[in-house]
Image (cartoon, rainbow, N blue to C red):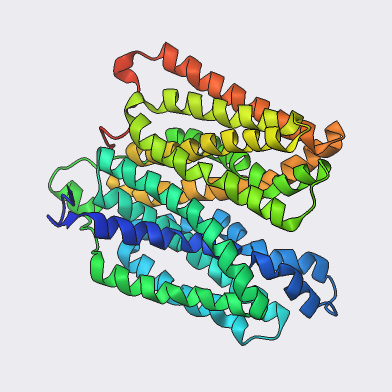
Length: 407
């Protein structure tokens, strides 16, 4: 159990669980309504440009997270993490559920923008609170669980959205109301970490740590590429399988779900690897992710393709908590919200650009498989760079996640 050094209060399982469940709301934003996209587009078939507008209704929350997360992090450092988190969760529920009663497609799009803004706050504030409540190895463990639970919740939300969508295309929007239950749990189980202002710190002669801008730019750049690699399988697997002659939606959905189960296994493996140091972990993780993409892109059979998918998702499951833990360990407490906001934004920008880069790559190479292989080679090169960095750095200078903080 860990102590919040400013308040003396102890954070444990209950606090960690409610915060990682809060982070799943950012997954809910898209996936719970993804199965009803064809129904929504059919309902508004008479609206000009619905072929473009329909997918935007689905994906606009992710764009909002990418753009607004740095602002959310800045607010978290100044307004307070818990206060901001509770406010966002309370607003998230009615904004998410509003399409239950709205008929105008533009009004629905407006609520979806609101959902994305609230998700940016929820994701940033909940992750920052994990950094505030836990230190070292315990923090790495909760960050790993956050990634793993989010990946598992994606499968569950797709299934729930599909079942509710079979009743009525509006029904999945009711799931957003569960945010109020999480808000109540957050209110009862968490507290606002005590903050010391810059002025107060200077008045007693304490040094206020500077924001590690150069390091965070580098971490966010790697995270952006990690986001591109992470979303290749979820977005492109159906197209790859289609090229093999597999078009049955049930088979495609089951394959994607089975592959995604490797992500939480990778995240849990990170718990045991965190003592090796950032560079060494990223070496193995990017090599795995890249190898999986190369196999997936070159394969001509379903079994071999799924082998590549599982290897890739296992590596991706290690990459994400490693990068997040690296960022968290590098940030002083007074800048933690802003740093997590930039990290979150970088990851979702990578998610946004992933299908765009693969589309461009497909046009340049003539086929999607070669574009996937190209991204795999890029991931392998990233792993080799991390390997070179780990070999060049003295053992005393390597970053052993879970042992020290910027604080």
